[in-house]
Image 1 (spheres, helix red, strand yellow):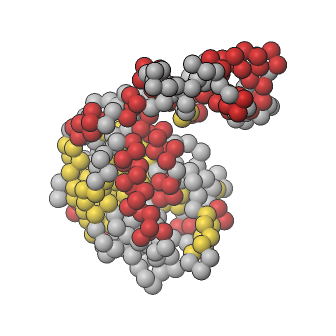
Image 2: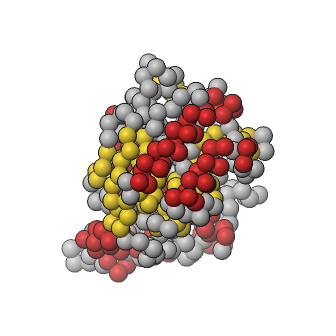
Image 3: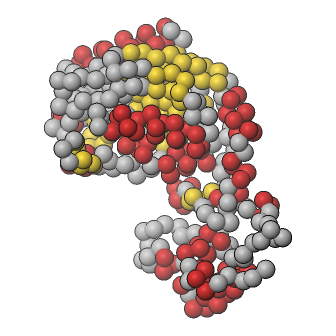
Length: 373
């Protein structure tokens, strides 16, 4: 076999990040930059790394195929992926409550409660609400409708309702999202409540919706909202769930992290608009489900053409093969659909992607897990 050519050698610095032995920074926020902290920038190790790359970067011909055993699939995730746990239930019904939203906050809360109760009556053990269901979706409204979730009670009537109804109905609720006020900042926040009514997790939207499509739509969440800083995965009575909010679904890395943490299901309350909705809403859901071989559920507000922000609607459940299992149009609706976790193993056995990843070529680093070790 011939050794790597000069052109390949010129890229050894970037490639060796993933190929040499376990060089990971504890954090990007250090006195040195991320790149200068890596060992191949050290004169003492430059020669070693050049030889190391030459050893590994070989041209393979028909007589010297790359063997699957050299792919190091487990190294494609750092830290190594957590095996998907056995879920507490194999089959259950999910309810997606596509709700109309008005400027009347008290009405929105009562309306959401009625929809949750109806979904539970129809057999839903897990209920998902839309993004910003207690408030109009606008930068002007976020400060006016924001609640102090940690204080609870009268300071957060929306989450107080979710807590009470989840306890009374003995169901799990992924409570869409509401504007949250915390230490002088505003967040777009999703709360997850267990069957005992207790808050199990709180996800603050990580990727803010800042877009400008000339002649179509301009919206800048960052004018009023602050981005969240942590991925959120939670063990519930219906399995391990990864949470994202709307724009978070565009970033496949977040979904990949959730899959590597053993998620069974990803829930994305969202409010795509009339420009991006027809093009991307279903596409992104199916992509996240297919890439990670798990379930994806989304829930949108119902469409109101008279509001300042017009939602696309089309709340949907997608299966681990990328198949649309249930969906609706843009009007108010409550979708009840079955989730069967036994399909996860079946799909992964048919397409064993986790065993076929090229850990010798690329790697996804979960810094939150890595820094906690």
